[in-house]
Image (cartoon, rainbow, N blue to C red; front, side, top):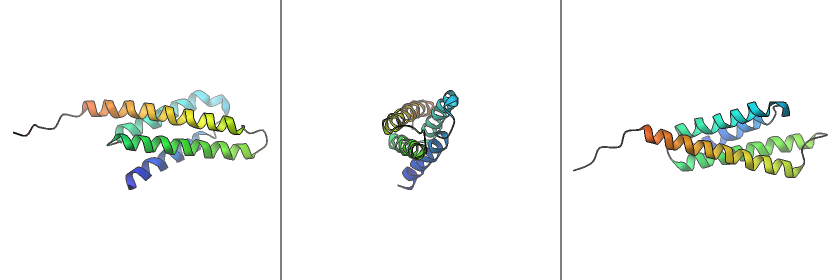
Length: 113
């Protein structure tokens, strides 16, 4: 359980920090999100850990968007929800791809006779 919480916290903190990049840095932010998913997927032991990483990314993005929405000229609530869902999907997809490739590289366990 601690490992799941760790994945969720990493996803949340990383995307919370990414959400404060200026809108002109959207390409950089997307690259960072892909990197978060790929890094998380490569160290994950099972698919549930990637799911927890994506949930953390969803929460982190929603928190960052909510903080920005409190200020003047911030995004609308619908934009925050849409962006949070998009971030979670990007992190989950790249995480699952990295998990599959990492598992494919590992040698298969020896057969028992």
